[in-house]
Image (cartoon, rainbow, N blue to C red; front, top):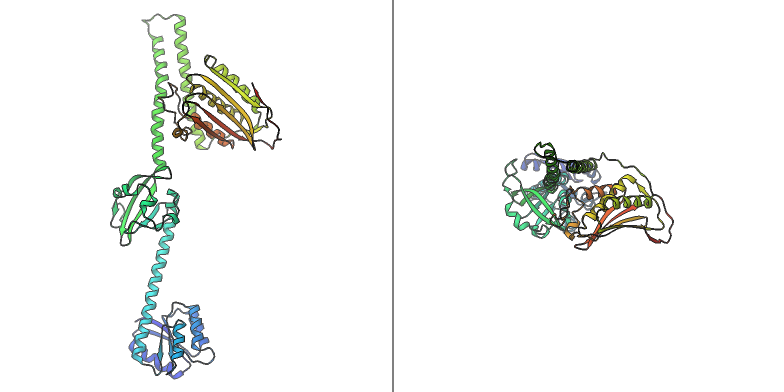
Length: 489
């Protein structure tokens, strides 16, 4: 038995005889001796012994006091106390003070050796448990820093571990997950769990992760997940593919939208050009002009599509910079409304009106980009009012800023679609738009431009009754409060 013990006693004869007796009965044992408790404490501070044996009655610091010190310094080290014959009260005090065992003088060496072996074995087991605990802590710390979500389910399906990445991906904190069945915290788990591949050993490539959907707090998550079974349950590792899946859907929408939007003007341009090139048709000047107008208009439409795509790409790449000036909203809005009235002069069923509060403080932003936002919002309001009606642009002061609202009496937007209309390539159901085209990038670009001016673009709408788009912008400087007198321009 390879072990190291400390023997403390003021009896020099015992310190000579007892170690020899122990060495005969315990192979490989190393014994240190101390004649005083003070010397013993120095040794205990330096060495983590497998066991300590101390006499109770010693001059100066006695064994019970030494025991208390040992419990402070080395609480896991088993300590055997040697008592004189008839000193049972001291032995009881020692046991109550945390002693592992006591041995009476004269020492029964067989009992003493057996007790000491048990103490050493206990210390060895304690050390193994501590090593395992430290190893588990190291493993846990590793799991705390991996990018993949990791959680452990026991045989009853209860969550026993939930790492920070699992929280980051799902939004579920450990205190909500630990100790609860997976089916309670992961809606739909019972349906997808049988689909998840489970390996019997953590061998690379042993199983291929399965992509499964889960709905958490009203949002859909797509997780690539696999598991490994072991004695304590199943460890699952997963990562989110939600963004990748959304990107794939976005690519699909982009291809479908752009191909549709390009096909119509290209067909018109191609058809008009082919007609002009035909020698078997005699076209007068009016027909030629009409066909050339078609080519020019559809070419402009193609150019706008390309511009929208490039514009959105620049916004996403971070290579887009806004100018910052004090914007006179009154002058800007009046100019935009007059331009849009001229643009839609042929729509006799549409009226575009402007209402501005009498007192407006200037806002900070890029006037050209804000002009682009207003043109797009008014253009949408007219286009999505197929039965005509009133489009009102209203500007009013708000606390710390100004709100620009564009209201229409058009087809409106369903509540479920209102959360999606500011996404790329999204358009209101084409079946309701009565032929209104577009790339679906306009509102995305507007939102990003307003956001970069530290503002906010929002929508409120009732399906079939119209929509209101609101642009909230901060003031360029602290303004003076005054009563707002509305006027119609």
